[in-house]
Every structure is written in structure tokens, then in C-alpha cells.
Image 1 (spheres, rainbow, N blue to C red):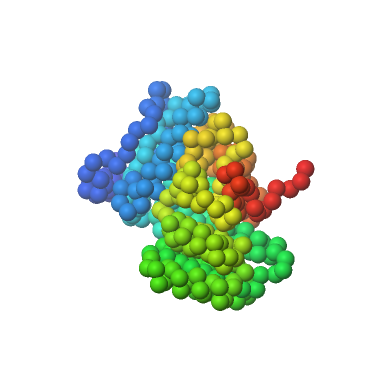
Image 2: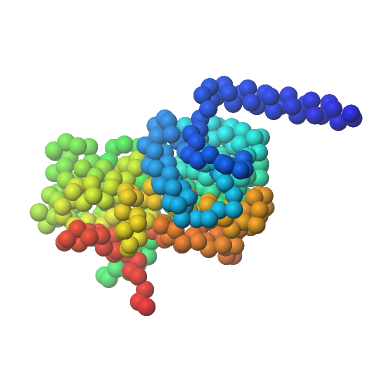
Length: 386
């Protein structure tokens, strides 16, 4: 028993970890979606189901559940899986502890989730360390996935993908856009987005004609309209909540002040449904950026209310298709399957293959508006002719 001291040391370390995890999670932070029949294999989804970002986690969880249910009905799997949702609380250290717990249990064959950038960063580092295949859903920080990523993948777009779309849209305009305006809300998310847009403006060498805050009083409202009339930016960003954007847009259009190229980037924790958005904006000319366009066949996907639900649904599709195609359920084979297979999902084409992609799925952002009859219209990029 020459290795007995080491075995004892490892057991004590694991016992300590278990005690700590029970302190962090006095009630198990998971819910079971489907129970395995023959095998004790698990898909683990980490989401902020409590805390300040719980509404975001709720929307994603709904999408995952719909996706898993659809896959269970339509797919023939060689294995049965438990699907469990774990509450990351939007806390990086909680997420790190969960990955350590899942790895020590040895049941999880693949995991996904953690849409917040700081949580996704910590989770991806922990997954790389533990050799656990992990699919990031939602987080947009550019450097979460790199050429050195082995076990981590990202389904959703990066922040820079949105900037590339806006840059290409601006470059496509004739006459060339030379001035831009930004009106932001007062909350931290709105101000952060406004600062990013200001940097974007500087990188494009465009004159920033307006940089102001909407603060919900009438004098400020009319001051902003007068400023738009005086400065006349060719492109205007409204980094405000939907109510403020609607009020500025409608009054500005009524007075013929608002630039035709006005892009509303609503500041919500979760996006409103299309139906709610349509009723909020009776004037259909305003532009909206989005990382997802609904599939043309709404027969099957009309129940998806926003892009977060679509992301969760697509995540479930990718997870189940990967496990179905993988020769076995070892980490190496699952990673290889993710790297070499292309899949069609409700969120679009998913492929992690190709030089320079570094396990980042390549998807564009879009600009859309609503037509006279309320139908969604793609403004940019326009589909290529057959």
C-alpha cells in the first residue's frame, strides 16, 4: 500500500471540496429535466437562475427545455441522458465550484450555459483545466474563445461581429456617413453601450455630432429634439429603453427631425417579444440590430419569443446532435465531433471547423425593421441572389 498516503490525501481534498460545495449550495442547485433509463450520463446546463440576472437565465432555460423536448421526440439516441440545470447565480466563483463538482462526480459528458461574460470566462477556464467539453451560450466577450481553446466552444456571436455588421452597413451607404449621434439612457448598461458606440465612431473616423443622455424629463426631451434638429447627424443610435426610444422616434419623425438611419438598441436584460416590440413601435421605419432572425417556416418555431430562447433551443440541438454523432462519450471524441461536424439549428448554421476559428461559431448580426403590415424585413446584410 505504498500509495495509501496519496489516496488518503486525495480523499481528504475531495471531502473538503464536497463540504465547501454543500456550504455554497445548502440545497442542491439543480433541477432534473429527464432521467436516464439505462446509463448514468448527464448533460449539465449552468445558468443564472437566481440573483440579478435570473430573468436572462429563465429565458435561456425555457429555450433549452423546448429544444431538448423537440430533440427527444425527433431523435433516435444511442444513449439515454439526464439533463440538469444548475444555478450559477451569475457568480463566477459559484460557476467555478459547479464545474469542479461536476468533474468530481464524473457523470457529466458535456456542459453548456453561463451567458454572462465574467461567469463564462471563469467557467471556460475551469472547463479547460478539468477537460470537460463546454458550450458557451450568449456571452459576447471576444477573447473567451481563442486558438488555444481545447474543450470550450461558443455557439453565439461575439461583440465584434456586431461591430463588423454595423461597419459594413455604414460603408455601404451613399452618400458616405460623416456624422453620427448617440443618445443613451442613464442606467449603467445603457451608458456602457453608449461608450462602446463612441469608440466605434472614433474607429470609423466619423464625427460625433451628438453625445447626450435621456433622463426622462420634458425639458431634456425637447432639448434632445432641438439638438437633433441643430446638429443633423446622418446616423443616430438610441441606446435607451424601448419607451424612451419610441417617444423620441415618434415625436422626431412627426417633426421631420429624425434621421432616416436611426438604430434603436433597446437596453433590457432580456429582449421583448416580437409581438410586444411591434405594439411598442407603431411606426415601422426604425432599425433594430439582432443576432438572430426567425426561420422562414414559423410552423415549428413560432413559440420562440426572442433570441435568448432561440440560443437555448439551438444549444440543445447542438448538444444532442453532437452526442448522437460522437463514436463514444469520452471528452476527446466529443470535442472531435464538435470540431468536425456542421449542424443546422433554429439559430442558424453551426460550425466550429476551419482555420482560425478557434472553436468560435461564425454567425453574422443583422439589421431589420418592420414593414407596413408588421412583417419583419431584413435590411442588412441583404440575402445573396441565387
